[in-house]
Amino acid sequence: MSETFEGDCQCGHCRYRIGGRSLALFACHCRECQKQSGSAFGMAFWIAPSQVELGLGELSSWTRETPTGRRMICDFCPECGTRLFHRQQGRTDLISIKPGTLDDTSALAPVAHIWLDSAQGWSRIGEECLQYPGNPEDFAPLFARWNEGREPAKPACGK
Image 1 (tube, rainbow, N blue to C red):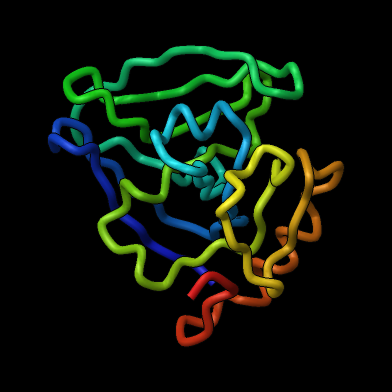
Image 2 (image 1 turned 90 degrees about the vertical axis):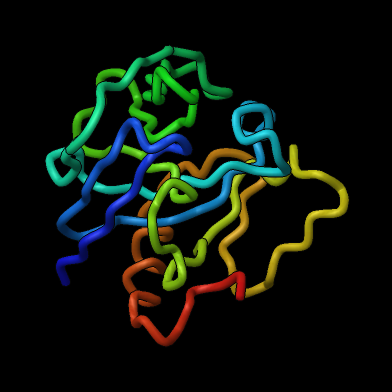
């Protein structure tokens, strides 16, 4: 099933389009995602990088270390600072879209929550979601759950 999504940064300087098949959507509760989002967790919407087209503006990037020791390239708007994409250094098969930057998120709900050992104590996660205390050793169950829940009228969890 091919999907099309469009999004932009907060100020509108950078605009992008995604066309193809999404791989997964999940929430991450690690401290780095909490800091990046300024909230209780960050979100990751995984897709193949070849499916992303930057239609307007240019991005700036910053590289940080992840909790597992990998290097993450964080692409953001140089005007307003909105994070749009995250890419793991050396990994070319996926890119993480920050889903809050999409124009329409009404049919999207996370299938999993990871790094729950770092979650805020008041966070409540539905039992229907996959749950991991840290980083999953294998993301295949997230991909499988995402594919199960891709019916527009049936969100995977969180609603």
